[in-house]
Amino acid sequence: MPIKLLDHTWPLVKIYVNGEVDGHDLDEHHSRYGAMLRRGKHAIMEITQLDAPMMTSQVVRLRARFIAEHRQMLADNCMAGAYVLPSAVARGALKAVSWLQPLPFPHSVFDTEQDAEPWARKRLAIHL
Image (cartoon, rainbow, N blue to C red; front, side, top):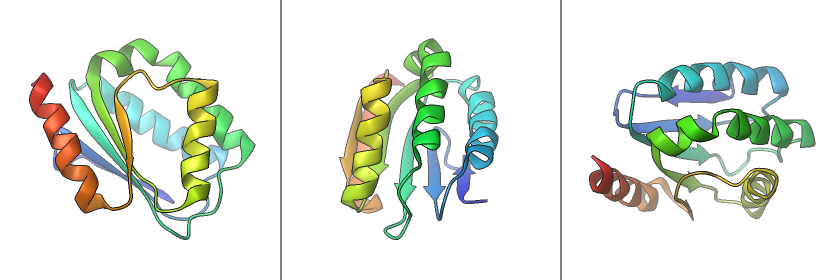
């Protein structure tokens, strides 16, 4: 599966995206993450590999739909989103999703996981 959801560092949840993501992969991920949203306040770090292909328009729409359908739960429970997007293509995909459905939590884009984690932990500390 190209999306790994790791919650062993709860309340910091790490999501690794490796390889091409299709609608089925994203539906499975959204099902797991949707269940996790009910656990309470947390922050996410989404780490996309440098060689990850561009998101298809279907995947962009599915991500936007998930945000729309879970807007209040995301706003209440996701304290921050740290996106590690080492390529312009990946950053463009996040912009496309955000244009369709703005993220209901503070977020920032980073080049490395080492840069993203302190920011995410600081946002968590503000809210916990």
